[in-house]
Length: 126
Image 1 (cartoon, rainbow, N blue to C red):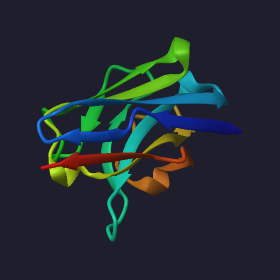
Image 2: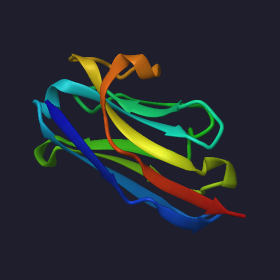
Image 3: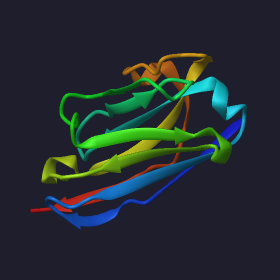
Image 4: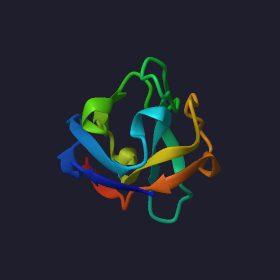
């Protein structure tokens, strides 16, 4: 079993920054790729970023590329999402997730992940 707890969300003005954190407990965290997804009201959950199990190969949705950075600290069982130059369209609940299989690259489809956090709200005002 694995438990994930996100933090760091909040209200920020457009152009501002936030750093989300997700702390994991339970399963061998370092063996799994990790992802961040988001869901805005009335919309489907969408991929934001992922990082492979080693931590040296991140991937991003086009909408956040060059603005967001995903990283992980296996010693702290934590994955981060640094979000810069935030836009109103980034407003959503953000979820971290653990990929289903070990030693993965971190996919962009939600069904590839089997453990999810409870989510943290990010609101960007214009």
